[in-house]
Length: 167
Image (cartoon, rainbow, N blue to C red):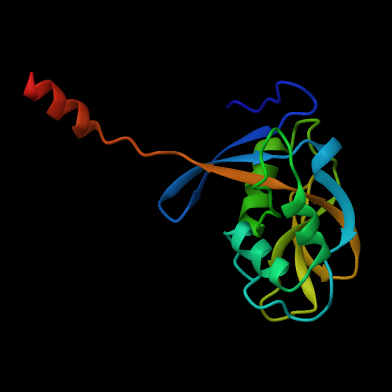
């Protein structure tokens, strides 16, 4: 398990994350640049921000609704990258699984980008420490940590077999 930041200002590798069948490497922004304490936003429903797996889609829906937390995340420029977003419930749970015993994340509540499906005035939080999740009114002030994902290109072993057969 490679969970290391080369320097304090470098993104943290949180390992492989699958969105459907597509594998990604999930990176967590360094706290110095990629963490903020803000409310999630308005208690009104944000159409399209209920995906439990796809934080980028949720963040884009929040951005379309002029959400300040989403604006903050999408405006980040860290390590030369500008594709940061707020993690979904499952993405942030994945981060908790990978980083819970490290110094990279405070033992506190963090917003996810996932709005509660049946209570649009609330969004989901992830607790770093014990690992629980619960929903809270969106006007609460909690930590938020940006993430980004990079697709892992699948490798087809038949390419090598075909090349060797052609020799």
